[in-house]
Length: 229
Image (cartoon, rainbow, N blue to C red; front, side, top):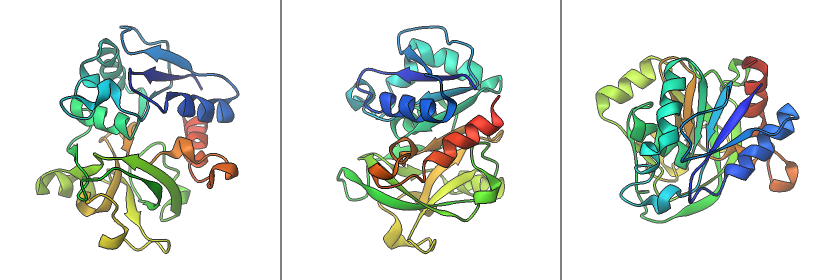
């Protein structure tokens, strides 16, 4: 599997994503600068977490207009898989590759801690159907992770299996208390209609080694290797 990680000014998880990809593929991914206009041939494009362009205007708003994003959008529309993590999820919504927006957390505070998320049954290519219903422990680190969309969009996402992850408690129960940021319907991640573009606020690349507290994020990258080659 050939992977590319886009590097934006202000990103701080591009190296974490590269480490995760190298761990599962044995090869270093291409690190693609935001100012480039061409992408190497890739089976997976990762938009990493961080604070691209200092989160000026809105989180992800300026990054969505980077030269490289024109190539990312084009490749996504051709069927290349794209994974947007945290700030990368925000960029995906700003480009229109995913619906909705990520607003300021309901608490108005930056939150950095482990959370529980439940993998939902749905269309996301990078989610193993055998793991449906499993509860994962994965860290979050964001101030603008409050997913919002209108009721019709939310109903469509639900009806078409485009909700990939929900915040939950340790038992898998989806409750208001388990929602760290106020996201509509406890949504932690969604995919597009094709299932090939996935955006999520939790950081699976920070949960690939027991030394980091969890290996639950590793399955996402292993699934990519199993399906994208």
